[in-house]
Amino acid sequence: LRENNQPDTRSKQSITKTKRYKMSASRIEYSEKYADDDHEYRHVILPKELLRQLPRNRLLSESEWRGVGVQQSRGWVHYALHRPEPHILLFRRPLGTDPQTGRVDPELKRQALEEYKTQFGLKQNRVK
Image 1 (cartoon, rainbow, N blue to C red):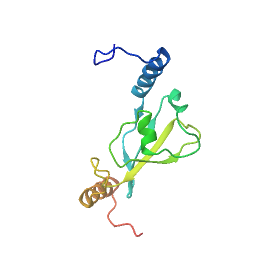
Image 2 (cartoon, one colour):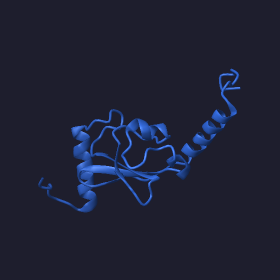
Image 3 (cartoon, one colour):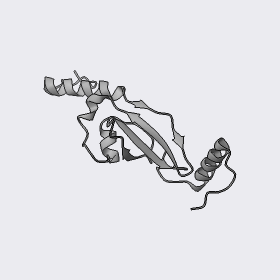
Image 4 (tube, one colour):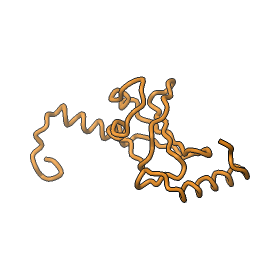
């Protein structure tokens, strides 16, 4: 029976794949966030069996990485491939991104930049 007490009409193979996927997704590891003066970053380590479900040699869209079970707030972008270990996904988002909307909030950006400068003892604005 399914959770809603309805008979489960899926094939045994489909049920087994779903259970395996849920087990794999529960083993996804998330790094702490780290930052520079433009972006915050994090990396996500996928169980290697999930790697087979991903396209190779290109960056993933948000729907693709969410589709394999990666869960994080809005605004994150898969920005680089880590070729030696393709099961490690590298993400970034601009400093000051509102996690609810995925958009940069100028006040959050100012606060994040101040925090970054304080943390690393930087006093002057970087020239761009």
